[in-house]
Length: 248
Image (cartoon, rainbow, N blue to C red; front, side):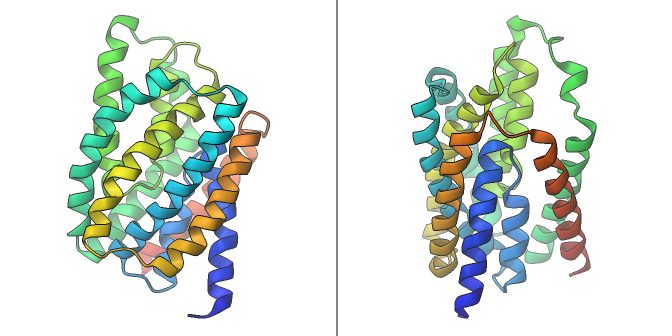
């Protein structure tokens, strides 16, 4: 493998690891990138999870240091998410490559539209507190299936759900909760891909190192950087890669 490709993957890993922690959706970039570099879709899906595991581990350290971890809520939501993610991962390992690419491109477009529309502004503060916990658990069950299968953009769906259903939750705490949940369900569901031999360890190592660096930086600066700039860059990149996948 060309050393320059691995260096490029490492650098992208830093950027994506940072984006995934301070915002969400970095996997919308890494998955098509890995596919572009020649990995089969299901191998790219499994390989990307190693990087996500490392970036969330390094971010957890920073969130703990900054006091932004709500362990009670994070561990509660991790239970349905993790259980459902095992089911989603088993779906993903057997999915046809063309179907995976089409599904990924479709969700990339949906993700970009949600970033632009910001549906949370229509629902925030309007949910009955008595039903919010039931809705939270149900939503994270569905998120688990999606995260186990595709993963890309799952942090955004978690953050969107938390902002809508948990009154007055600080954004730094939102990022902390989604980091706890993601780390746990990725740790468990990745074994499905591992047992099926769907991880390219050369790409995984380069991406993991970069993502760990980016995740560490993201955990440190999660409450400082403006979301709008990150969102605009992410939207442009997502639309571009979605088009590449669909045309492929």
